[in-house]
Length: 209
Ligand SMILES: [Zn+2]
Image 1 (cartoon, rainbow, N blue to C red):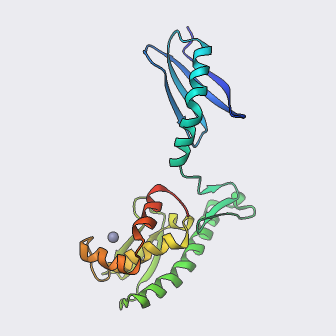
Image 2 (cartoon, rainbow, N blue to C red; image 1 turned 90 degrees about the vertical axis):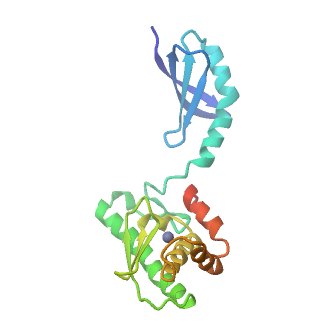
Image 3 (cartoon, protein in one colour; image 1 turned 30 degrees about the vertical axis):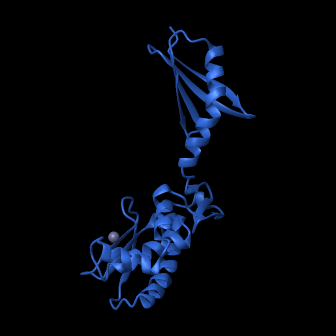
């Protein structure tokens, strides 16, 4: 008995792979993986190919569009890297050793941050001199360690526009005055970065610019 098949389908002139799974179910279901660019279609066991194809052409294109809207593009793809919100080619980047790649990305972000943090520290009248560190953090964009006088930033920030990175800089420097995330804290943040909410939303959604 057939259980799964892989098809090629054409949607508005573009060819896609579809994994068709025949299952004991009542209705047809469709998913789309934006990274792998493949559809998965779960269908009742006796569904005809014609019906499945009609279903795909009816819903496939819309589903793909919706998924693509919420799937961020890859920050690094071959020799192309999103640097400060723009997709740039770094010749032979993909052939470098991982160490060299990381060092390059780290240095690029660090040189921007060193200048930007000192600019904002002046504007915000932050007295504490901070040491800037960069870590490949995934769960946080920045950490202010006031006792150690260090600001740690996520290496992932490098992919975002300078405006977006700046909003993280302002956030972390505001912790110099208020450690928690109270209203007092956010009134400092919004004073220096009135569109903080919009910039921060892009970080959450993986919108690089
Ligand atoms: Zn915070």
